[in-house]
Image (cartoon, rainbow, N blue to C red):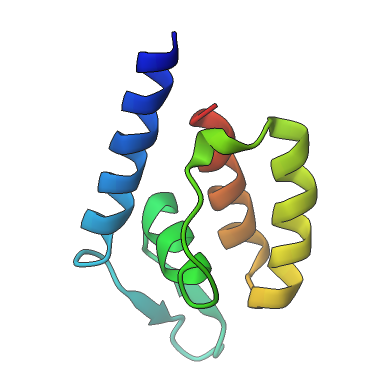
Length: 94
């Protein structure tokens, strides 16, 4: 079980780092609203690494990620969709 969790964390980290080179951010034509075509792992890695080292997704429980993600949504100025994608990604890694 411990090996599976470590493997899952390593895969999540690799996906996040690989995601840095893919995707992009676009602006919705005419509305000025930010829409993201980035994947959850990429959003997580780009937004979290700006201020601190990335934590393995399996380091915290789902309820802990709820609190952390809500706090960081405000601090990182994430859209509701970005927040939702990141939170689903983090919980799926547990």
